Image (cartoon, rainbow, N blue to C red; front, side, top):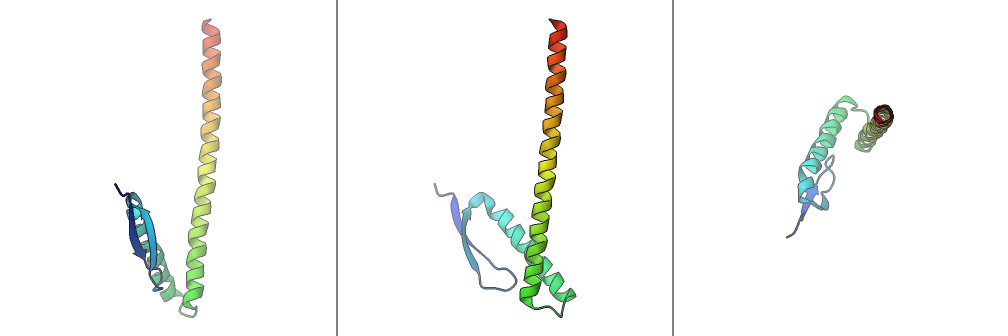
Length: 100
């Protein structure tokens, strides 16, 4: 059974970009496409003195910033979970030692 499908996305009025994706990823791809286009439209209206390329660069940078902020947050969560796990392991080990 084929789990891939062909779609096209269009960013900021550029030529369609053909993609072959997993069927389960289509919703995320469409949300991403819509989010980029919505921000592009908003910022094009706000920054009328900027070219489409400049606005698109600003949009790309904003999404990259959000992505890397999310990476940092995920890393901090991982570190916190690791500390909690180590603390729980230590407490469990102490409880086992006391019961022996």
